[in-house]
Amino acid sequence: MVSIFPSYLAPLREALLGRAISRGLLELTVHDLRAWTHDVHQAVDDSPYGGGPGMVMRPQVWGDALDDVLAGPPARLVVPTPAGRPFTQALAREFSAEERLVFACGRYEGIDQRVLDDAARRVTVDEVSIGDYVLVGGEVAVLAIVEAVVRLLPGVLGNPRSAAEDSFSDGLLEGPAYTRPEVWRGLAVPDVLRSGNHALIDRWRRDRSLERTHRRRPDLLEALPADALDRADRAL
Ligand SMILES: NCc1ccc(-c2ccccc2)nc1
Image (cartoon, rainbow, N blue to C red; front, side):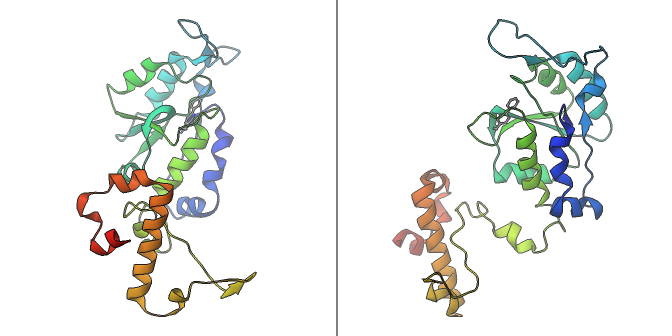
């Protein structure tokens, strides 16, 4: 990863991802973009051509940084930006199959477009958005993207089932989850979940997923392949 705030990416070394690193399941290197500046002010930005508010990150510095960081085994360059294509669970799976990913964290109004155009001559460049809102830089998006990707790597999650069955794997939202106690503040766990009847439990969970998806994300229902909903689903 390349950023002018390397410490922003420190959380990646905590907890589950930190353990995956110490277990050798993945390697993480964070580079300070300013290491590729040569002027005394270590300038990484400049005024935008065409005018307008804010500053743009200079091509020379990013170009030199990516020349070095992209050298070595083939990598895919991922650039978080509000103008990117949506980052989805499908794209997370695609990224998790890559040998190497390089993340460019932009700040200010973003990175001079020629940096991405030049990189695209050598590697695949993915400008991705993790949602329709503007952050102050790409670092927070990289934390989200890396977490979504790394949890899919074999051996990272204790229970591989959860990666296969998590939200979006069947294209639907996850339904409600419960644990002990049976009644808490006067609220009881749905009886079916304590019935031991797993066919009924699976049906109930599917119904709750369909209900929640219909209510919160009708767009996901529209996007389902025609054969994704069976007769019982449609009856809901
Ligand atoms: N899709 C979320 C997202 C990703 C990146 C940025 C961003 C903001 C400023 C500079 C560079 C990137 N904002 C929002």
